[in-house]
Image (cartoon, rainbow, N blue to C red; front, side):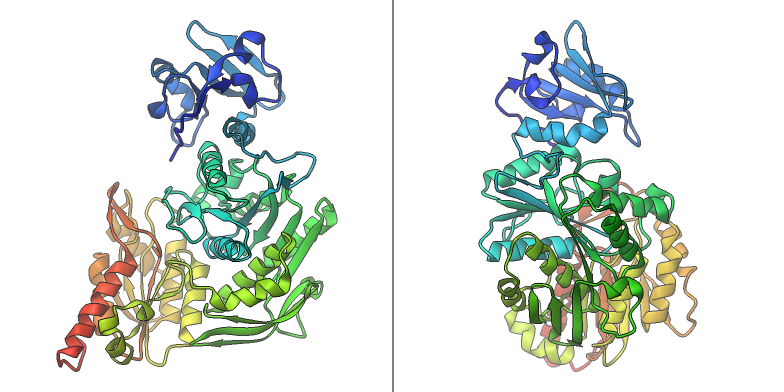
Length: 542
């Protein structure tokens, strides 16, 4: 996605803090865009080298479409240069990729991160969350709670963007490119947002997409294997995550120190001393915790996990409180504690926040229990006859393990796992996920996720190669809809079926073509059909 929003004309000089030569400075522009196909007359075309294509190869196409100025990158340390061509002005900008977010913010008239270290601009502020797992849940819960606290809050993330409580508009990215992200912030501000919550992916942090945003509070959830196809190794992946907390605007870091990398990150941030506050949190209720968690600011005591959710005592510098939530699983307890601490860092009253927790609902496609969402006509029978069905976005080894462990606690019968792995992504995690599924589930159905350009059969074989538990009931069914249907139909009423990997997604990409597909819709249709069948007198599953 690349925003191609045209605005009223403004001087090119307004995009920069550096002075431009007079002829270039007074040039009027109305669009900032890095996709030459979206250029309109009066545009500034940003020509950056990318992973697959080089924007500089499309300058002539952009100028032909009406671009009057081109931004190109020169190495950091070189001087800004302005070159007047016959039909456009080229601004050769040092380290453009690192500064594009701030340039885009000025173009859209958004608050820009104050490099002197102020994370709040004219009452507007931003919150960001990073980590391998939990970003969407944390971002959505944060925005929902801010809205409930009376603070209009926008959200940008994997599900899409929009105001809290309103349907999200899909973008196709966890964190859109720098220009698009600033365009979305502008749109949310225009809709009344005083706060915007963003998910900070490792790709976006490595590519400086958020560098110009006034993020005041940042939350770290965890670091486990993912995206090594891009980063290469875990050290580089971790460094990308840590970049969020180095942004000059960030004043508060909220860190999960139950995670080994998180504990190291918290210690490093405290040693550097540039932040107003480093808040460590832990859900480990153990007197013999490690030295890294002895300094924990926010602790959990007496946590209980039941079919109805979680209860726990929360011990904090701002007071203690009883936490009650309908969310399930230890990882969701960790997510919630991190969000609560982040809200208080952003000025919310601790006890007010705690009073709102019981009303929170699960985020779409995140440990979403479908038995509660059946049609009213079938709901009564379904709770007696159907297996439990849970949809979750778990698409990493750790996320899959955490989801299966959380569901196992509630499983009286057998635990089923329907999942696949995405194509054109880290192949090393496939056998790991096969191993985890075979160790933690009783029945495993390997199916398609988004194979993209890869062979579905090869992906399934990669997953199967990790299956080491010979007692697990294993099946490969590449048709995802059929795999979901067969698992639900064959499971017994005390079983639980986890459908993992796609969560909220409304598409499936096969051989480069996206078609509509949603796990929740498919599973709900199967469950409603089975409920109707039971109502008509059938007493057993297929």
